[in-house]
Each structure stands twice: as structure tokens, then as C-alpha cells.
Image 1 (cartoon, rainbow, N blue to C red):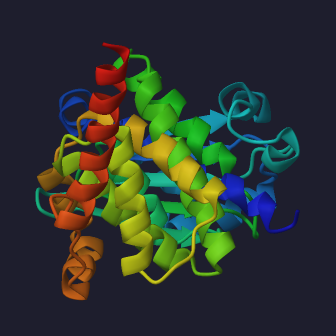
Image 2 (cartoon, rainbow, N blue to C red):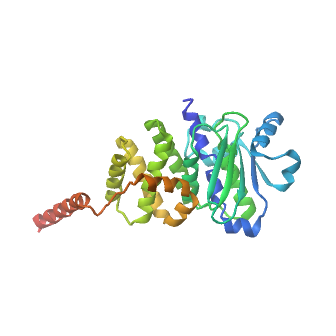
Image 3 (tube, rainbow, N blue to C red):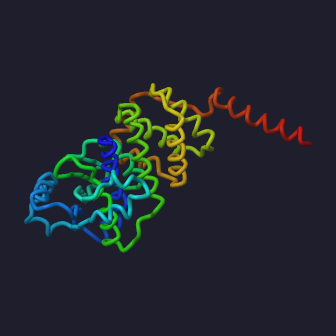
Length: 294
């Protein structure tokens, strides 16, 4: 349970992804700062120091305070209430950067997730060119940062966060973190999910093809996936497919991860004889079945 409590930290900044760059540039030039409402004075000072913000500089930021009630409102559908906890403590700083910078994430006292996991989910949601810091006064879950970004977006733009993006990106972080724990290798889990996501976003695949892709990818990465792992990844990828993600944008925003994948030389050909043979058998079975009915 102790490690599971870190799961909520994985989604601490995912709602930051809901801040479209063009909207921010047009309506708000200040960087964004979310502070957990349950921070006491000592904890608040510690968090601000980790975020690189002085008390006297708070006027230079768009500051949002987030309550634990806010957290439960948005996160109860995804996480156990015990994991979310009873205090909103985590905080997030987001600064828009120049074109070509990509998504860069730093964590302070958020120990369970990797920066690659954050980058993956943020890119899925459509964030571009942002420097993001997630911090807590000590090792904590980080859920307040997530809800803070929701409130900041709605306050600054007057627009509701797209529910499909919220669900998919949150789902991605949860699936990746669970997989990282199962494999005992969070970095490889993030790489595997990023690779499969790229293939799904690049091609128009059926559910059966996605399943075959997951099987082949696990072999290429040298990992063993349980049926539960495979099913959770499949459901995630079906949601990602519905988002119609821009593959080039994914690669631009987290180029460090995709460059690493390219250097690994992993390639899966869903048009290979092996895969085509698999689908041909299905087609032949259906034809045979229909002929018998006739």
C-alpha cells in the first residue's frame, strides 16, 4: 500500500496538459502556480523553495489553491480514496517555453513516477513546449497539482477540460505506473507504452491488430506481460486511437524518449507474413462459417 500511495503522484500534473499553448499565449502571459490548500506555513515555504519561487514573487504568477475536496471530485473515478488521501499538499509550476523546447518535467519529493511517464501523458493530452516542476514539502502523492491545473485552465480560459483527454491521459499514467511496478522497471514500462502508442497513432489498427502489436512489442522489449497487463494496455490504446494524436507532435514534445526508442532499433511490421497469416486465418474461418450457413 505504501508504494501504491505513490500512484496518485503519477497524475499530479496531468491536467497541466489541458492548457493549450495558443490559449495561454492569448489570454494569460504569467506562469502558472498551483498550491495545495492544506500546506501549513512551513510546508508552503518548503514547496515554494523547491519550485524556485519567492513569497515576494507570487504576484508574478497565476496562483490557484486546491482543496482535498477538489481532488476527490476529480480523482475518485480513477483512484482509491485512501490513495488520494485527506490533505492537498502537492504543487505545480508551469512555464510556457519557446517552440522546439518540448515538454520538460522535473519532480521534487515525488518519488514513484519517472519523468518519462509524465512526459508521455502530457504529450498524449496535447501540451507543447512547457517546463513543469511538480513538488511536495516531503514525499507525497501529488494529487493537488492535478486538480490545480484543472481549476487554472477553467479560470483562465473559461473552458471546461475535455473529459476524453482527462480520462485517457490519466489512464495512461495509471497503466504505466502499474506496469512499471509489475516489471520492477518504470523506465522500461514508459518506453514500452510510448512505443506502442506511437504505432497505434501512426496506423489505423483494429483491436486484434493492437493486441498483436502488444504481444510483439513485449517480445521486442524482452518483458513478460500478464493477460491483465495486456488488457489494460489494449483498453488504453483504444482510447488513444480515438484521440487521433499527431505522431510528429508526440515526437517533437518528448524527443529525448523517442530518440532513445529509435536508437534501440525496435521495429514491428504488422504487414509481416506472421501477422498477416494470423488475420488470414480469421478471414478464412469467417468465410468457411458463412459458406456452411449458406
